[in-house]
Image 1 (tube, rainbow, N blue to C red):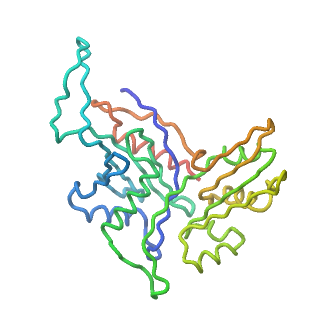
Image 2 (image 1 turned 135 degrees about the vertical axis):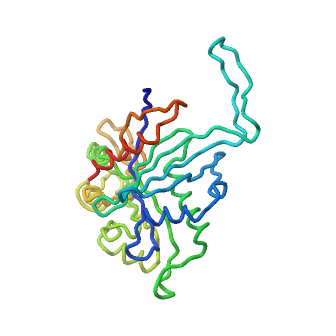
Image 3 (image 1 turned 60 degrees about the horizontal axis):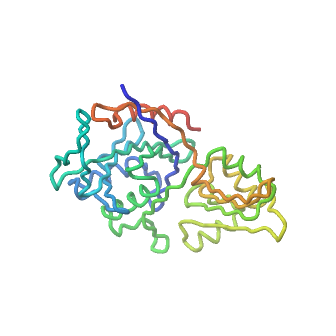
Length: 295
């Protein structure tokens, strides 16, 4: 059977505003199932259309299967028997689809999504917007909280899980000129920036808080203390959300990198079906094995 090599990225999902104890997987599954018609799950983003075809929870793991398409895209067909170009046989209302598999599970206190990276499919940044759109569509202005001043709308955040290369790249810098870190409520990292930021963010009813620190001229931020030290501690505890670093390498070249660019990822070989697309059953098996290895 033919194989397709696909990158699988690790992202951390946070949904704030839910009642305590709400399981993310069940919540997203139930939200999707409240939309009866597939056409009502379609959202247009950047010239493409995406739909959450199905959401299931199997053995406490969330399986989301997205389909993506471009309306009116019917390229010419190459007949390899005689290498002749032929018109596409699809009708005006028909088009091809790309599938994207996403597996979710809670691992050591955080909820991870393993996202298949499909060139013509839905990407993690779009998944965040899609899930928010779907929740708003189903739940509307549904507010959660015991008191009016504590009420909070349901808000989705999807941040990349930084790979080991992120910290290695920090250590390779001779000077760190600028560092930015973002924490997302209610992740554990929310209270890590020595509590003062968390207190201000809570008082402001913020969903996300960004802190940026810049070194003095010709100086460097400490790579073991302060904001960079906090970034490393959060990384070690698997609590790091988005972070960005600017600095200078030993050869004098400037360097700039983020957790989005250095996301934890792995390349898997996935079986293809007779139509040349990734076999759904094999995709779930391979993603499940990868989830088993997350710590």
